[in-house]
Amino acid sequence: TGNPIPFGFDAVIKIEDINPLKEFKGDKNKGISNDFTDDSKEENIKEIKIFSAVSPGQHIRNIGEDVVANQLIIPANHEIRPVDIGALLAGGVNQFFVRRKPKVAVIPTGDELIPPEEEISPGKIIEYNSKIIKGLIYEWGGEARVYEIVKDIPQDLKKVLQKAKQQNDIVVVIAGSSAGSKDFTSEIVKSIGEVLVHGVAIMPGKPTILGIIDNTPFIGLPGYPVSAVISAEQFLKTLVFHKLGLIVKKREEIKVRMAHKVVSRLGDEEFLRVKLGNIDGKIMAYPLSRGA
Picture 1: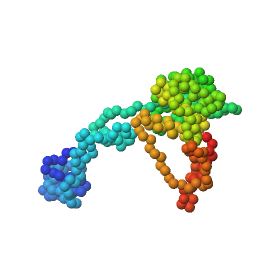
Picture 2: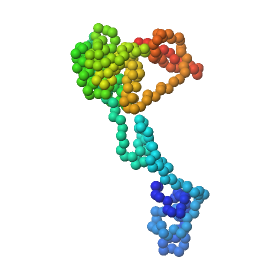
Picture 3: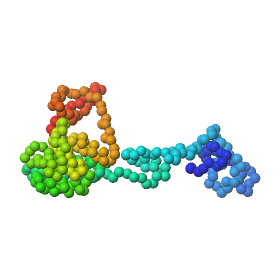
């Protein structure tokens, strides 16, 4: 397999499709055998019997069948799959340039937050948003660095942001983006960078912050879990894909029938979570709680 075809030949017959007629060494009688494992030598074979018809080009792979010289194997900004690696190696490409995975800082904030390993107490909330966002970032092709929980102290957040923007390609802060007394993320970003947008026309996820700190993109996600995930899907995912030279693929769409009417706020794009069910061959959508 893979050997060059001798000059003058244009087909290959599989060994299992022939029956060799050979002369045994030391015996003048001819015998018929399918066994090539005996002591007889190849030169003793006088004739072969072919069981099936043979056509020109049979079992022959032409030069350049997989890849021809100077042919493009994969384009730029292509997400490499296992089959692509095989094609590259088969084409003699053992080294190639790839984009570095973007590093994303994930900074959870809030006096009420505690790490998952600590025992919960009244007034405290287990911090898990950063774990969700970290998982999404890895799923999108980036690298996430989760920082320790930052308490609601403006100067502490400012120090962490200044450090994070030097170590990462994107900086994300979770919580502190609304209009509460302890929601000062926007003001901190203004003091060391620029706030481009504070508040977007989506639900959940309205208080999202988009900014830049010394040429490092900044995203402030809402603290409520659903809001944080939806905002990350809409803004952070696009940014990570852009750093990788990729385009976010459109989600698969299906037509459903709502189980009951839903009224959304005028001017906002609402991301309504639903539970799907197949009722008499029709896909029904049952709206879930609109809590953020």
